[in-house]
Image (cartoon, rainbow, N blue to C red; front, side, top):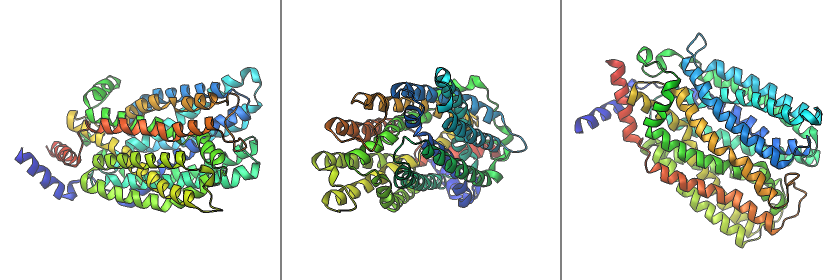
Length: 489
């Protein structure tokens, strides 16, 4: 045992042995996730478009979006298998990134500009077909975010930096887009009932996502080569039959899936556009607060995430995720108490009082904690991929990332349905809540359940799963030392 630890220490001290890469390349490649998250944000309003503009029932749309997310999960292993089999002139990942982004742009444009014009008797089928093609493009590009990191670097101290970039970019993206929606588009068009709002939203999304995708391709360009794929030429070939052995034998992947998927369904519910409208637009009475307060908490959010990244570099990503999860539970409990025992209508930047100051203070800690707990999920998938190479000699980042996504999406697919049935149960069966609705106790308690209660359940499941997750910092150094020995054999 002492001999193994000595070898691990010798390996970790010799950074030249690692497949390292410049930090700026990690920063550029992280933009691939932002490029797809931009579409995810834009499609977050699809329920409002489908019910308010295209005339489909709220509950029907909820069922469709849940079914499409399950379909999204089913396509993941297929795309992952194709990624692992690909190794051509343009690499393993770049072709899928480009094709995926092109499909996303085309299908988003088609959905938001044509569904409401299609005859009613075929409108639902048309919507489902278009959305299914959109999902294929989304899968192609998002699978590369999870899988591509494995070839970027295997340095345990460098991988958390991807999580830092990703967290900073996402904070800027979602806060910026929330401001764009609440302070510009919604006031400009007077609510979500005008088609012009959706047209302007998707035009912006298509252009910016294409730019971000181009930058991500530059970031991965020099690393998307065979010598950075696992054991290089010694890597074992894989087939579909290997999916089950990988999932069955990789405890790290199993526990990460449990932790991340339960968090995902909860966060998808809490961040749903309808929930944001209910919290800020109805309970607080000022929907623009969603964007304005998001801007206020942005810098503190980034600083808290930077602290979490430093912690992860020193003590490992597992410990950082657990720390962020505990902090999320504590801060959201305080947020719940503040909203229940205080008056949400007193939260205003026009007349700043105790409720405003207290809410912003607690919200800063809450959002920062969530960013820390979520920042390391994607880098930890690469750890799981290396762990599989350590266990079996297979280098299957595509399989690893898409197996993760398949189960993650299968579970989290019910987020939209939960929101749809939640708001339907309090009287919104024919449409989603809008900023013009009046607050009442039913809306308040449903908002508390969706915005705070659901995330709490997810975080508790994460803490339980991390008890059985084997890849702490010492174990990852041992994994990389063993892989290097196999390469040098």
